[in-house]
Length: 316
Image 1 (cartoon, rainbow, N blue to C red):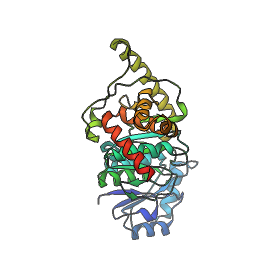
Image 2 (cartoon, one colour; image 1 turned 120 degrees about the vertical axis):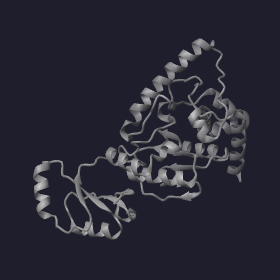
Image 3 (cartoon, rainbow, N blue to C red; image 1 turned 60 degrees about the horizontal axis):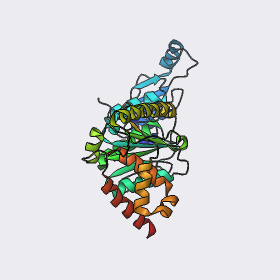
Image 4 (spheres, helix red, strand yellow; image 1 turned 90 degrees about the vertical axis):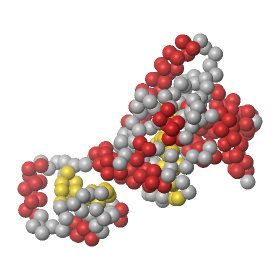
C-alpha cells in the first residue's frame, strides 16, 4: 500500500490519500468517512497537554481491532504538514520561478506584476486573496490558505504548464508557516521601500532557463566596477537579511540566490519612457513590477513591448 497524496479536509481526499484530521480524539465516523473517500490512512491530532504514553494507552483501548484503515496520532504543526505535502507533490515550487510580493495590501502590485509577466508570454499562476488561479483557470480556494492548499495549488500550476507563480504574502492570504518548503526566487516588500538599492547583478541562470530567457540585466550604475560589485553585494545581503525576518512567520525560504529588490530608478525610467511621465505616476506599481522582472533577467526590449500591450489592453 502506497500513500500517494495528503489531504486535511474530507472533500479533498482522493484515492490513496493520507488524511490529516483536525480532530483531537479518535472518531470512528471520521475514519469511516475518510475510508469511503479512498483514504489509505488517517492521522488524528495528539493533545499537547497529554503525555504520549497516557494517550497511547487510552487510544489503544478505544480503537477497534477491525479499523477500516490504519489510524495514527501525531502533533503535526503547519511546517511539518507543509514538508509532508511538498514531498508527496514532488516539491512543485522547484519547477517554477517564484515571485513573492509582501506589503501589498491593495493587491495592485500583484496585478501589475501579473500583467507584465503575462504579456511577456509566461504561463503563470497566482496565489492571492482571491483564491488563486492557474493560467486561465480559477482555483477558487478559501483563504487563508493552509500548507496543504499551497502545495496542491503549486502542483496544479506545474501540471498545467506554468513556468512562474506570484505569491501574495499576507495574513489574509496565508496561514502561519504555509510557505514552508517553498523557495522564493524574486522578492519585494513594498512596506520597506527605504534602502535605495542600486541595480543588482543577480545569479539568474537557473531562473532564466525556467523563464526561457537568454540575457542578464545591464547595470546603469556609473560607479567603478570594483566599488559597484562590493556595494551591490552589501545591499543585496542586507535586503536578504531583512527579507528572511519578514517571511519567517510564513516559512518561505530566502536563499543566497534569492533576488530581494526595491523599486529602482532604472525601472521607473523605463516605465516613463514607454508610458509617459503622467501615466507612469498613476501606475507606480508597474515600476516595482518591472524592477522584479529586470532582476530576473528579462530583456528591456521585451519589457517595453509587454508594458505597451498591457496598457493598451487595460484601456479597452
